[in-house]
Image (cartoon, rainbow, N blue to C red; front, side, top):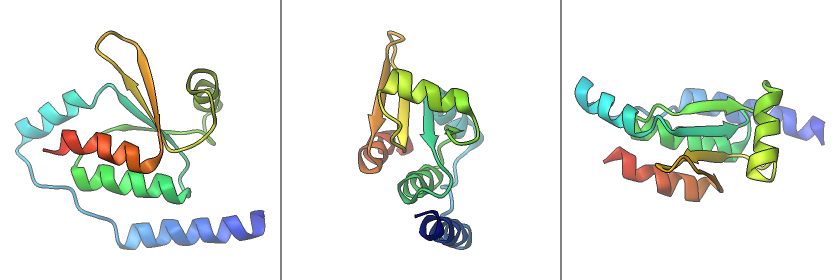
Length: 120
């Protein structure tokens, strides 16, 4: 399986690099406001995962600054995802709510739909 996943993952990363979306143009104050509204978000992801690439492309297209947490490079992120999120599935958006409770949002489509509200 590794012999299939590795080259496909590299191809996905190359195509993502070549055809990278551009962020919207905003004033510095608008971007600061958006950054403040997304400071409570973290995306647990893997670099070559196609669904993670899809989610990261949407983040870039929306012009959002969200902390990316690679679960392969940092064991503490992987353990936190398993312990608190309940499963190792990526992409997963960690949302710290106003009452300091944490919501774990899985599925790239659901994550992108959630993030759209910050892009406006």
